[in-house]
Length: 174
Ligand SMILES: Nc1ncnc2c1ncn2[C@@H]1O[C@H](COP(=O)(O)OP(=O)(O)OP(=O)(O)O)[C@@H](O)[C@H]1O
Ligand SMILES: [Mg+2]
Image 1 (cartoon, rainbow, N blue to C red):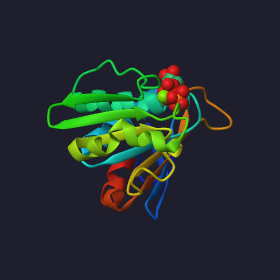
Image 2 (cartoon, rainbow, N blue to C red):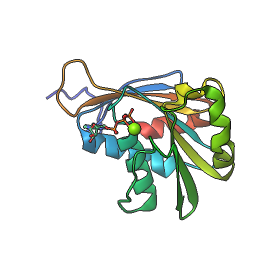
Image 3 (tube, rainbow, N blue to C red):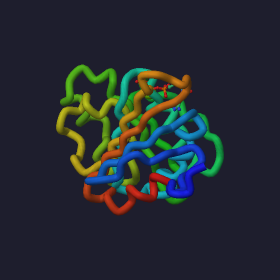
Image 4 (cartoon, helix red, strand yellow):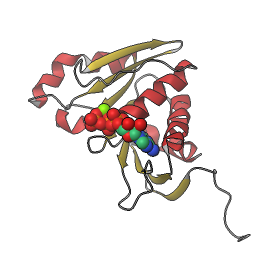
């Protein structure tokens, strides 16, 4: 065993942490949930978390874990792919979870009350690309993807921190 290797969390390895960007390897769903729990602890009103990644990459799973961790108990967190917006009134923080996949036009986002959601609490958005430039640029982007060669259940996550997230980014590495 190498003694020169820096200690790392057992399930998460940071591979890059420069310029407000951090890339982590998540070996399994448990690691995704651990990252989500760290994010939940850092989340505050006015925060936008943009969840990017292909269908089935784990955006809803990640949001579910953030909401449950912040609630301190497992909550039923359905995918908002049909309702588009779900609101969770938790002790100390309202979290709104939105999924914009079904938006036909970016202009429709103005009717969803996402400004109000950011005004009263934190907002996590799946498929933020569908909103065009109608969401604030200052955000934490969480980009999930499956690694090209397994193992099954593994993900690579890229975190990109806007100005309000820079100071919190390192804490997300665990
Ligand atoms: N490490 C992991 N992180 C996240 N999800 C994982 C992981 N390993 C396996 N999964 C599984 O992958 C699936 C991800 O589905 P999920 O609904 O979260 O995807 P999504 O990105 O929200 O898709 P959509 O774009 O359709 O909304 C779930 O069944 C989840 O349990
Ligand atoms: Mg989803």
